[in-house]
Amino acid sequence: MGKISITLLIDFLFLSSLVATLHAGELETEEFWKEQAQSSDVYWKQRAKNAEQANKKAAVIDPYEVTANLSSNINEILRGSRKRSERMLLRGKKSRAPCRAFNPIDKCWRCDPNWAANRQRLADCAMGFGRRTTGGKGGRIYVVTDSSDNDLVNPKPGTFRHAVIQTEPLWIIFARSMVIRLSEELIMTSDKTIDGRGANIHIAGGAGFTIQYINNVIIHGIHIHDIHPGNGGMIRDSVKHFGFRTKSDGDAISIFGSDHIWIDHCSLSKATDGLIDAIMGSTAITISNNQFIKHDEVMLFGANDSHTEDNIMQITVAFNNFGEGLVQRMPRCRRGFFHVVNNYYTHWQKYVIGGSMNPTIISEGNRYIASDNIFLKEVTMRVLTRKSKWEKWQWRSINDEFLNGAFFTQSGPEVMKEKSKYAQGMIAANPVAWVDRLTRDAGTLSCKAGKPC
Ligand SMILES: *[C@@H]1O[C@H](CO)[C@@H](O)[C@H](O)[C@H]1NC(C)=O
Ligand SMILES: *[C@@H]1O[C@H](CO)[C@@H](O)[C@H](O)[C@H]1NC(C)=O
Image (cartoon, rainbow, N blue to C red):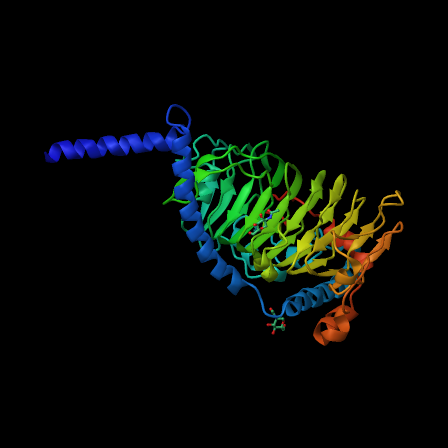
């Protein structure tokens, strides 16, 4: 009797692992998928509930304080580096090879020749709304050695997918340069850093990143391009759980109900949907030092007018380079608070910054260079809203530079009168002259161990 039930149990286990791994074939009936979808729905509803609490806590009460800190830091650095470069000129050939870090985030780590032995230092360098993001700090280094992505339910140790589903904090690096084609969306867990420094990493030709109902993720130094929707099916989302997922959108990075996310020094282009979308009350996010090219709808912050949870969205977009072949949404915002600072924008094909539903947008120290087309001069775009409504939204441009006829239509109250602290942070700003340099190394860097990066 006992023996039989053990055998049955083993059979059952064997069978269920078959169900798990062979998600194609005869088991794939309508009914099977319906059941999977239902149980998955319950699971993700619970995850959503937990995440909502965390997201709320992650938003700050007075976002101006955070932007002020970022601004005043920039001013300090600008003054500092001017003095240093003068000194360097004076010293002439005797000076050491200069470190190329020009903005305050980069200055925090790039000049350290031992960065490769000291990778987790990066976790102390975030600024803006995502400033408390530490990713896998304190965790083990996990080395990705295998670029395959063949088993979505039981990913092989050494693969990228195996790394990102682990429960513990992990600092994920790569054994060598590689192209990883994700068969389906890569569903991440909390407390992870993806660190491409020292290798040439391309996430390309397959699905993209899903950051859903989690927190504390750093993505640094990788290329993400040519991203397509996944078909869906059985995918593992953590060590303890896998389940049925519907078709994914085809975003390069999809941030969904998550907080404390920092995306730095990545090169992003060409995805079926957005390059970086942050939706469903995601907050405490910094998007810095990235290079964006060749894409239509670049960044969507808030996807649905009726989602009031997006009021807590707080996102910093800093030191990015928005280059050739971009069309619109850099970003497109709903509700929330967005600080767009010291970015370089050229040749947009529809607009740069857009929105609806009363988002607060502070554009500060950016360089906007319009194309020659006389219909493409405006930076801003209020989407489907009457003027009587949008003229109350706070969209301000402070110390931006506009070239070739570019212009920003401001609305709402001025920032300076209202927030003296913030205004103070602005006075010494000298953004026009420095944006070039601040964004010069946007995108992935080629870092060699033993040398400043
Ligand atoms: C901004 O900086 C001040 C002083 O440097 C500090 O006291 C304050 O906590 C900072 N604010 C935030 C939100 O980090
Ligand atoms: C927006 O969200 C509401 C409420 O969640 C939903 O009923 C509606 O279908 C959504 N609209 C779109 C266009 O997705």
